[in-house]
Length: 485
Length: 95
Image (cartoon, one colour):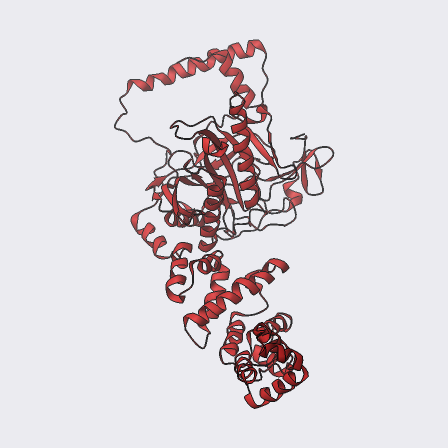
């Protein structure tokens, strides 16, 4: 029996999402990233004695959005707590968080697995808290601290231990990113730390009911790293057990360069947070009216949009998956689709192909954002319209596309300027084809004697002679007739 | 419920405080006295009383999500015993 069948992993994720508020969680300092160190601070977020935090309403609103988008129960009353620990990037000596009575509880996200099936991953809780500052360790001597990030609002999403493979964890995390970006409450960027993920991992023999001893894996700062780190840790634990040993409960840091998870010294994790209710903040009460208001203002969520793309645009599920992966891309597609001259499934699919292959290729290769894409959705649709009208061929369109990337011009302008209009004049094409046939009499003989695969050769020669502008359908028709003579 | 010297040492460690043996002994007694006094509260039946998280009967105190001016980095660093540019400088945390 293969190792991965003999054992199964149990994975739970804790995801921190930095919320896109203008100001911090408990003071009016800006949340803007990249300013001069220690310039986005005030007595409140510096933890000066005698100051009082006041809760940013959007921290509650944004967390409610997430809670409702993930089917959570919203606590009618929730309170803040102090999580006490000493670290230089935490000036107050405690983090304001929620412990008992978090604002969102018992939700779920449905994620899609490789075999096309859907798995429901439970969400234990989503709570509000504040971020700590940044420590810079890579100096020769001391540690340097920038507390600009102190007090930036975070939402922590804690899953049930429902995931069984690193792929499921990856899918769950992707779904979270998708939802927060659709909601516009977090930019979802793991590399820049606005979305962070810690994992609790254990393994047990398949079929066993009890959980094994778990370890916590931290410092996985990309989606790929989460999958790799979990894979590593699952295999490590299995190997320990197979060797007759037992897994030690500890915290591990993923080292992406070396591809290993390294144990943190146990002294570092001798935590005892002594949570207690935050006396400086009053309870948050959320009534049914508030819930209804947030609910009615929720945008269309990824799963709904995916289904609508399949229904409205008759797209294959595969296309809908890719197009709705990111909200910006889905918006781009939808704007382009709205500008199509022919609203039929063929045109919808055609523009889907352009977006999935050509637009995404440029986006990935050039690292441009979809919102900054040089070709507007209108112009892309106009180009597909030109193909539909027979003005240009699909092949010429590739050339037009490249030109639009460079000049941002309307495709019609490019076609006119460059003389790319498709030659559909049968008489003109017939003349050209006659020449092609006359110049290649050998091949023509071979074709006649049965080498019909040479048909493509004649098409190619005709295209060459017209610099690719010949209408392929008409060329085919004429060639078939002439070669059959 | 009573506190042992071990717990006093644990709390002291969490607070990054160091005490002599006599002090630890003293604090163990003092903490126990305090707890014993508080223990009196258990004589009351509070099973029907909701836990109080705040002494003021207030809820939903919010501020709008509006940026207010911060203080300058120079001001922020005024009390710092050591700094590099506008960064606080502290003893090395992780090796």
